[in-house]
Length: 166
Image 1: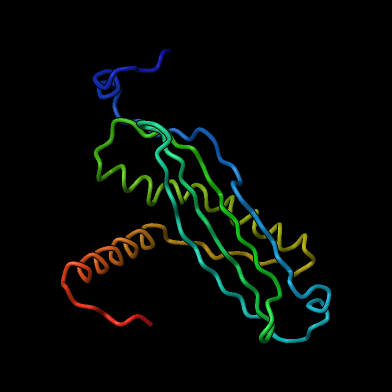
Image 2: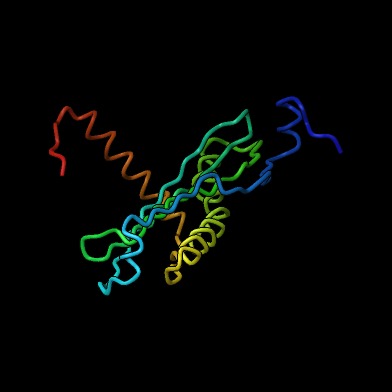
């Protein structure tokens, strides 16, 4: 079966959503105070930051990434710092712009996140630390939160008010 070439042929074929590839785009691990960190008896405190990114590779072909930073603090020291980006190439054709945004902001990260969780847990465990398992995420809520933040920033920049930063 041949792929539709023209926009008319693609529209006639209906909506298409295909995963082309999933890959670990970037991973880094830092243990700044090794080996002292392995004998430190301080209670570990974990901090997580997560974000998504997207890039159009060509019409209908997108790279979507989920990036996570995990920082383990032991008192005032950093026990370890892991940064990783799990990415995928997705073919998305024949969908309206609002549906495209939902696919790129919710569906694609939902597919990538389990791979990211596994890779981060593996890196941390291989570094000789107890396993750290990232919690499940509600990607729809995450997407809605990002939309609300973007709307608030847009409204603040259009109001002419200067708001203090924290």
